[in-house]
Length: 360
View 1 (cartoon, rainbow, N blue to C red):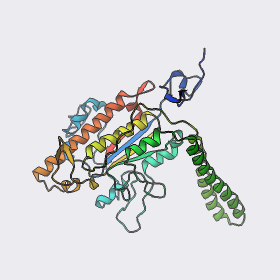
View 2: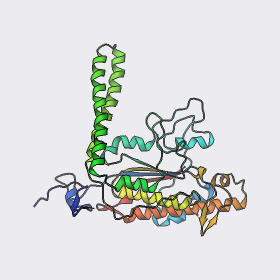
View 3: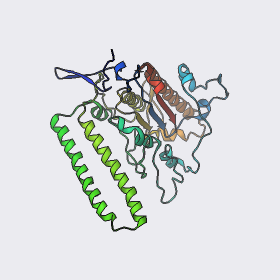
View 4: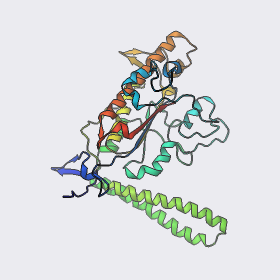
């Protein structure tokens, strides 16, 4: 007997409660498939002050290379990661301003008139983002929202990072009341009506143009039609119930001194977003530059802000504090990999379906 195919986001409903179903065999996408399909994910993490290179990079090569002091924290997953060294973006020079080009590789960030380009995550979101409620999620830790982000649009516009965990949780899991949903759909329909009018006017205007201008206008109209498609998708998502989770709403951490606690919290939110298929593309910018004196462990604080520590001048005390901070980061990264490895996506580990990039 062939079981009917059901949508992966089907929910059990009863007594006002929604419960998300696990991945089932009948959720396979094709009639001839016997196993559920899995989707590739992308999670990109960047600390804009990086780590100390000597204890991070291995000194040996080959399959049996010796793990560095930092990478030893990830020993359990050494078969799951690859270390790249000696890589840089050509023409991306100029100190801290280069961090905005981490995923764009746009040249000359310090030059007058510099304009950034589309980031890797947004390029992927253009191709894959319509399959989930959120095409991508852009998160931050101690982020300077006005000036720093890993995510940039095709027009080089910064996409502010979300550093409020409870706000992100509400977006992902708290269903709006029927009135709020209707209002949001109405807003989307109004935007769609504006675009419809724009397209009608553009078609009439096109008849008055020369060949080259008609080509430029056609290119523009294609972009407008893409927006129309995105609006339609947004309307459809508004009518779908949000996924259920047994996680409690997180408590926000506002104190920048609790740097690692905030880092761990946002990594947990990134994992939750991927686990529930709320999105398949996540970036997390760890803004160490904007982090003042911070807690290392056991209520022990650093003697200076993160940025000043990075200008250590080989001072032993500052180097030791940076090493401790780097070790904490590696511990958090190891914990993330463990959570991804312990989460099943169909018949595979979520880790096997997720490209995790960590760098600066």
